[in-house]
Image (tube, rainbow, N blue to C red; front, side, top):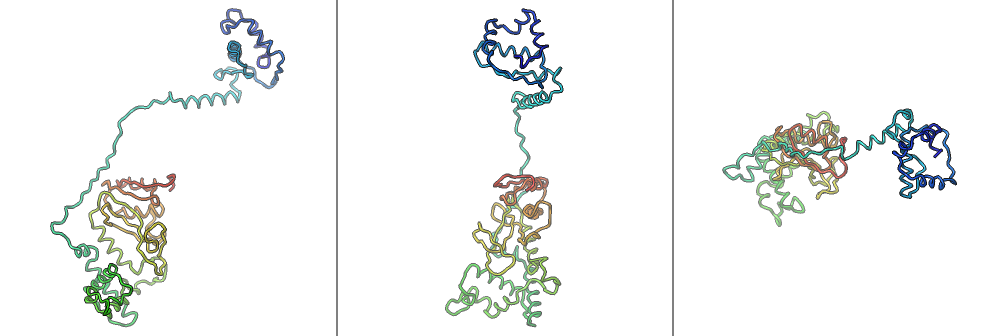
Length: 381
């Protein structure tokens, strides 16, 4: 033990009275002498730079020796220091580290934490909106069609188509509103009843009366040639890329305003859709996981019934105004901004648009958000 005790410590132990020494160590003298005999041949390296240890550390080590003798275990060659004694080891770096480790361990004890069982507080998410009662009279398909494509839209198409015919070929087209309405109706009908060639609808062998009896073939192709919804002369920068939808821009707000007049449902979702198209266009997109992989991509806000309430056609980074949430989050906010606030609408979205900042922004407007996240969701995305 001389490797651990200073001369002053040994002198103090030798001068202890028998009753006080036995009060700390109740071990027979022969057992202690045996330990000394066993350790006679051991070589102990003395660390000259070691700091003097305290009285409590000495007694602690002697008690450890006595316990080891009783049990017959091997005695550790390193004493157990008392880190709670700060009288002599205050300046020791190792002592401070041990104290810090003990404090950390103390803070991590389960007994220090007391868990209380409290009732779960349910937030108010009840929808405050309502849907109007169904119409008394059953609406026909034409009535629903007129909600979105009203007379002002066809008057605009007829006017701009006539202007374009005069500008291009000096032809007076003079289409009427009803004629343009018939022309658009034929285009929709051709999308349902398809033939290999448009000419076949008027052919003698494959004549299709619902189309051929409405407009003759010459007039149909004339309207198709000069169909326009915007005056090119009103766009001095028509060839620029500032607005990739400038050719149909007057038509889009008219359709969007009609959709926004519909009473919204409680449960809604924002997702991307594809308008199938394989022609030549700078707006054509390829989306691998869609049923129609090539076409125009647009984002929709639709209800649980399948009704669409708003949409935005994707044109790149200028799809919508910057709201500080990235392109995906800005699109969602743009589509949700027409909903009344604090009505607790429920909004669902996929992993491409889901983020914590978006959920916070919608929560501030009183809109509940549920999104899917494939990986780890962070505050940045």
